[in-house]
Image (cartoon, rainbow, N blue to C red):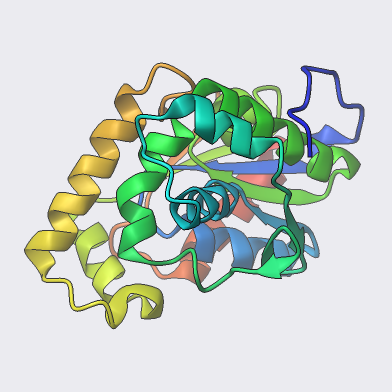
Length: 229
């Protein structure tokens, strides 16, 4: 698939709900539960970067070789089939949740050409509206004019605890200190990149999820949406 040129995508973006925040705050779990409650499509934007990162690793391309990484984009298709993440037609939903992907995804996703390419796909997928999308730049870059924007946060201690309990990471043999260092590095990389850094989107509602169950966070979001309508 060739790198997409910048274009305007028409659609019903009034029913696009964006959920941003750092790693380990429960964005995916909350977004998935919210989409099920509302009958909306769930879009995990971070999974798209993870899928492409997997292809970069499989092709043995060094992280510093940005030209080759960008060239690989032209031969890559990342899409969704329900909750399955497809990389060139292959279901990689499980393969992208590893510490190897964790260690490279921030570097690869920071490449401007990679971000523009994948953002264009995200906008195309969400062009029909009724989408809950979560990531790190959904409300700030992908859909800055979305009517419903949320930013989830939590303490580093809570984020480490949740990551250790996550079944996708539980069997990787990581210590709490290793997880903490990984999260802190990811935060630094996400917040300091030049293209689409992690930040609280303008107009977004901030929700601290410490001590809250998934259902309670979803209830808060729905309550806010009801008050905005």
